Image 1: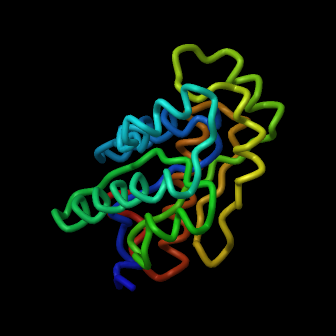
Image 2: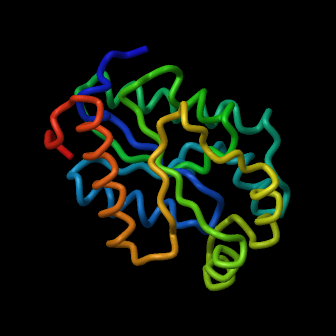
Length: 186
């Protein structure tokens, strides 16, 4: 494991089901921290996008190359001394294990919301390749992060600004609790 636990993370993975606000929160969080932003969806091969657009859930076989491409980007950013916030569904522990692969300088941010709230949000969203009908499969697949993943967990039943500030506060608090400097790029 990388021994950067007391320093700021080099990457944050903002996860949750479709419609939880991953892209919006990750982009705003990146702006707030002055870090790079990446939408994990851009790493999907065209075959995956076509499958989801047709209303077909992805299989794990579809996901492994996509997750590895995101993990490679995280490694590239961290090796270069940069920082990034990446929006990625990362619904299963096995997916997050690929993304984090033992790094202590990569943190998971879990956007937690009820199925009813998220269904409402999806109903109002236009032009996205994930149809609302796949929400049930997303919740069936979801394995909320466990304590040993050291996640930052935030409720999405708040304004974007409040959610972002909650994430920043939790990151500062967790660093201070581990004996690291509470303010260093976060």
